[in-house]
Amino acid sequence: MKKSILTILFLTTFLSLFGQSDDNRLNGIEKEIEKWMEAYKAVGLSIAIVENEEILFNKGFGYRDLENKKPITENTVFPIASCSKAFTATLVGMLEAENKLLLTDRPTTHIPNLQFNTAEMNTSISISDLLSHKSGIGQLNGTLVLFPENNRLKIMEKLKYIKPEGKVKESTIYSNMAYTIAGTVIEEITNKSWEENIQRNIFSPLKMNHSFTSLGQAKNTGNFSWGYGLFQNKIKKVNFEEYYDYKPAGGIRSTSKDLAHWMLAWLNEGKFENTQVIPENFIKNARKFHNSREGDDEPNLYFQGYGLGWRVEARNGEYRVQHGGNTSGFTTLVVIYPFKKFGITILTNQDDSILPYIIADAIQNRMLNKKSASDYPVVVQDIYQSSEIKKSLNKEKPPSKSLASFVGEYEHKGYGKVKIVLEDDNLYANFPTYKFFLEHLHYNIFVMKPLQDISDIFNPEFAVNFKMNENGEMADFTMNLQSEPVEFIRKNKG
Image (cartoon, rainbow, N blue to C red):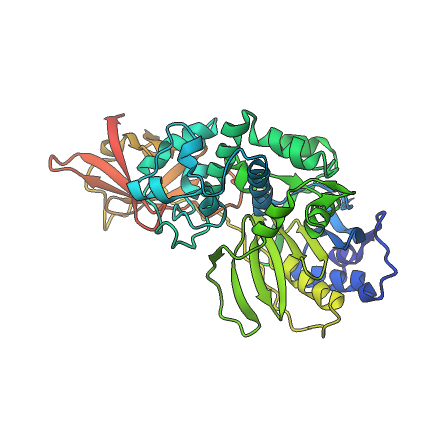
């Protein structure tokens, strides 16, 4: 890399209240972080290291706003994505401590009109299964992102129409929907929103004064980070992910300083500044092994699985409790060593990056006086960029009917409605959140192409496969929103 503005960016650090440490284990840590930021072309990050009852190191590096050269500090707000799951699980643990629920309860006991797709799911899924990804429900991100609702109870009404991705109690499939259900359980029991519960029961007592459940609130602080990603080795700014009503799975925005307080509570059996904030019994239960987790077979990884809101593993002879988060423009990590009494939070404004994991591993080696490594890989996935839209039809494999024949409203009761419209001799698909151009692939199969910049959540270029009935009319289309194609039935013509 040439020594240019980017070099200055990567070598610039910004001191904070806890930026300096006399701990010999952390000597040279700033230069090591800067080195990896440069290797990854990372715009910025914020980091906190805690041990026992104190913050050892808390500092910002690089920029929260690259264009305007605004620095990151320990109070810069980042979306923490799936690191939010431990907060939702903690609220459940608090309700258990108050004898308002049992982890063995079925969520159907607490949510009116909630029914799952099968009788076995209705009778077998427990709240604990939701928190440890044993429900078999699956990701179902298509319904959460493409078909959001204005309240969580409406999402609950859809679940009886959505087929599970795995078997109850035997599944290891990670599920944002499961945490959306858990958040709804909390709301129904407390008669308060998930957002209110987080603020009152966690943010306030832990003095997490720069943490929010609203993107708007985060932006109003004036000290929030924009998100960035790499595409063909170039830095690009990306849009924020809107979490709509699946915030219990990933909707918290926070800072490294606030998350230092969160880690201190977890390292001290739920106490923060001598006050019991999180029930001690839940702390111990949440960090236990509740479910296995698939992953690479590594010689230094003895086991890995799910706790309650956390991932748990034994790596290099050390037991650790951790969770990462990945959202449009950001990658985050919170990792705690409960028996060594230290923890690390790394928040970076780089999309789909393993940078936080590399830095956390380097810090772990320092804290545990282990041999440092220098052969870490540089792995950053390219962000999604829409391909060029081709408006011409495939003349060699044309549609079986005129484009006007495809027009109409199509519905899947577990997902929602899609309107297929004809404008300027082209087909478009109108979803509740986005409008897509339908680019013809071949015969009656089209590919969705976004007409606006969208957050880098997933590649939305799904194939839409239209099918006809015995009368030669378009009857439905399928999309691969789950492991098996999801069918949308035509309700009326346009």
